[in-house]
Length: 428
Ligand SMILES: [Zn+2]
Image (cartoon, rainbow, N blue to C red; front, side, top):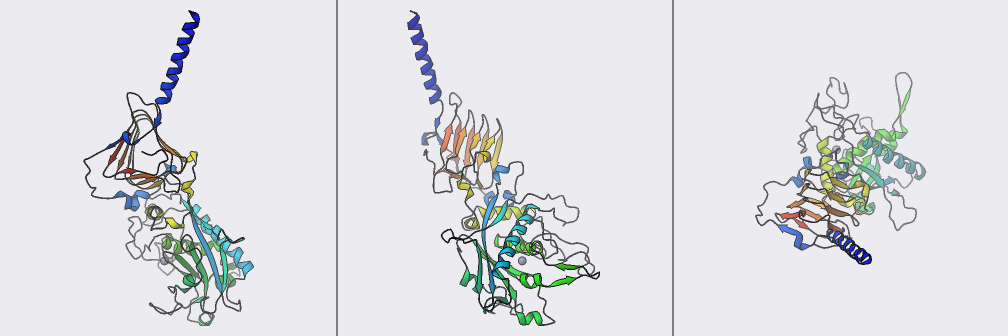
């Protein structure tokens, strides 16, 4: 009798263990509820820069991105007018480090006066990137070319060779053009520098694929002697201001002082270089996309604009190191019980997405998860894909949707307005 009771107890505990495992499972196509009332949306938040302004309360939505760059120094064939290879390599490393330091030290905008805009963290850094198949390639290159080592400021208009817009440096020497932003350090023409009317300033240009910076070697050589006899030398920190400005163009930003740049938080202004420079200047901008002595501020909207392009295959996404394909549990997003959240922007989530009980998430744009990551839905949780797309933007799929503690109150997955879920290892 005792043995029999023991057997029954054992059997029932086995059964409940079995039920426990059945209570959680991968979602299948049968779990998807398609909302047939699929109205087209009238506006698309996925293409609004404001949607991408970093949300500091949810850092996992804006992880740090790494932008691949390389730098070319072009000198004349007699090696007279630009950095030597030894000096140039150190200069470029310092320049990139200082540009990244400036990104890390984003400042509050000075204009308009009295504004309450925050200094948000800048979620990207530059990484010098060589060709992986060339041993020792550090992404710093030296070329010797009497035709292309200089810029002629006076050659204006299209078709005028050697002006700053001349693309031949990029055409002739560009490396890994599909995945790396190429940056060229060239100089002013030696004859121009000797002309008393020519201002050999730090100039540049930023296009969608590459940038050019002009005059760093000359400015570095020249010592500025102050009235009291102190001397000043042009440093990589100063050079990095214009570096970030031209890279800003590559990343999709426009000037702010004289045009509508698509941002409401970058007012037009007189374009002063500094206080009382030129004389009478009192309102000075510190925005990176103006010409001023500071260039140390990205506004929230400017960051939103840069980030938005990071999600567009035809935007700047191709220049990013695909860190979003490597699972990082620390960058998971867990909605609190009962929380309701809307994703009106694309996201590269690097960890899991967890919807605790009774929470709701509405996905309106593209949400990418890395291989190894899963979506976990707890009791009464609701995942709504409203015109959006949940997928893995990597070669390998993400794990799938795990339905936890199933029972009477099953979680719900709703697809609206052609919302879709694809590229999951446990397919739906
Ligand atoms: Zn510019």
